[in-house]
Image (cartoon, rainbow, N blue to C red; front, side):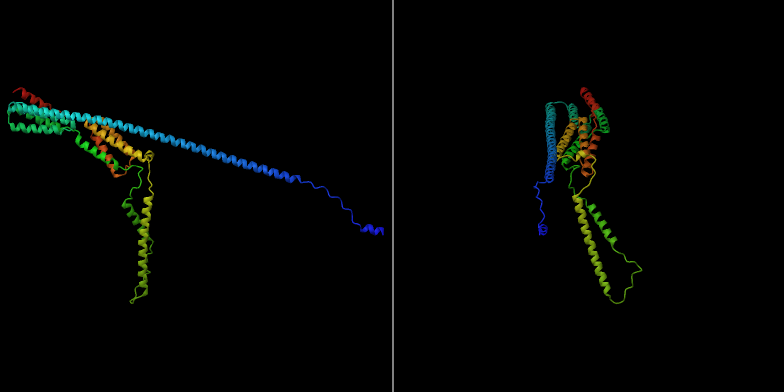
Length: 391
């Protein structure tokens, strides 16, 4: 009995060990948070560096643009001051020219009063009148820079002496003929014609296209050439039937002839439609995009306000050349025309017809500006003095 009871009793269960938290999982979780914090700190540091770099670049760009704006402002003020100084100088020169003209008018009035007040003989009056007219014509020639007033006065004196028919004035008439031949044989500068050319150039300054000017119309010849090219491409794409494949026409009407005629009409319609579409597309592309070669990059950087100042400066240069020409300061006029020619070649579209014509006109003006002394009718004046002294 005891054996059976001992066999039926369950075996003793060992006591459960006390529960302790696993250490490795806690350590792994702490390391993960540390690495995540380091990664976030690195990303924040990188973003901070990028923002700092962008802020520095923005500050540098703002400083550079501020410096450029200040430089342009200073340059504009300098140009305005130069223009004002040049205007004052031109006003002073105009005042001097008006003063000289008033002096000439005063001298002419005095000569007229003197001729009216004198009561001399016919020959003496003629000699004095001729001498006064020649000296007045000489002053006019010096003011205008042209020998035409002097030649006209000599020719008028020759006609008056011929009408007087005085033998003692024959030496004066021969001296007048020699002076006319000598003056007409000289190559003199036509000052009035050159002044008119300078005025015309000054009026055309606003019409000269700049090198950076856009929006110019496409020539009609280019559009026609593109349309002709498209037409050739469409015609070349059509199949051409061979001579051997053409069958003789039957005597009766066939339905294939009507189909061929309809097909030809459709093909012609598509050909004309494709030609119109191609012409419109190419014209729009030519109007939107213009590719050109620029050898002078400084001409592209001209702002509209700078272009206005440059055109006004060119007008002042031409006006200064005109005043220098009237004052017979040929070197100053040459320098002003050289500056205008340089500006035309540097900042304007030399391919435009107006700019090309302006360059040719400036070159012709520079060639015609020759510093030559006006001739004097010395022989005629000497002969008149001898005739007046031998009365």
